[in-house]
Length: 413
Image (cartoon, rainbow, N blue to C red; front, side, top):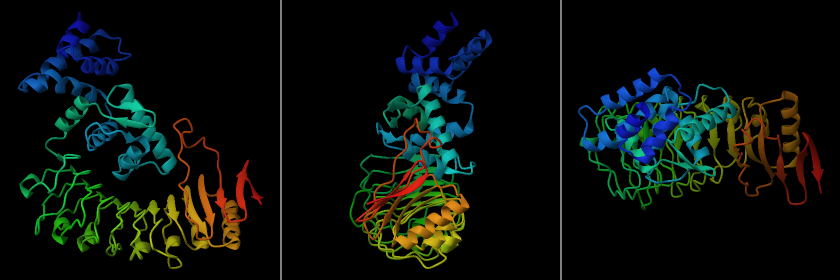
């Protein structure tokens, strides 16, 4: 009788019924079922018809997650465009960028935790799974946006050509997603006063000559994640240098970018990604980013970094760079993933000798010799769970390769 009443409260909507059933899986005590029914009935009070029929019923499953970390990861998925299939490893990186699973001390552990969270969300029908990608059903996403309605602006993939006007940028905002639009300009002299804003996603705005005035970031002191990847920016405004709480600065494939302002004040930065920013020739203040965990400088015009630069970044766990001082790299004891181009065999031998002597944390290698193009490093399957992956080295050179077999290095001519 109670179960029948719960189905009626879900308005017979299949997705709501399935989601509710998954949330209550394993519950055998009748008092919990009665309490569930009472909460569903209470949720109808003072709501619109739409919320009565669907959103508040689905929200029950969100509330039953019972873990703030998992709930925040779930809400983050709603910042992507409607119906978008998202690579699960991209989602995990996003969770890490926001610090949602950042308390673990290695990326391997963070990825395992991220995969566990995504599996839990799929098990209760809050995310759909297709091979290595995930997405939110429209109704589930509507529910998530309803929960975040006071603290977020989400206009992802809506065909926008302008930034929402300043009246929408309230002091309650925590997350703004304007990704995958056609934004051409930021209003001149616009300076949103949003002290709580932690995440700003402007990636993949595919218009040319995007102009971002210096005033825009002046009052965004709390910003932690700034994603401008895939935008046609020629330079970043100097005010970026003052975002002292920034954890992740993401500029992947900003192909027209020529200049990045001095980074020295960004001591909280954990991730800097300028992959394929082909016009960038230098980074000032990089050696001061002592909390950096993730650094991708590949496919840029940045040559060999000054000696000691990488050696100062002792907390690096992920490094992708085409040319560097091999000795600096061997001092990175926290390094887990390395994609690197050695200049010669001597440089490589020094690295191998130091790596095996110090028994560091490296799990994944993609190493090249000479100035050949770096290949993408291996992607890890769910079954591998990162910790179970075979440690391997893949090094290429014109006349021979050096590979690992069973943990031992071998030359192949």
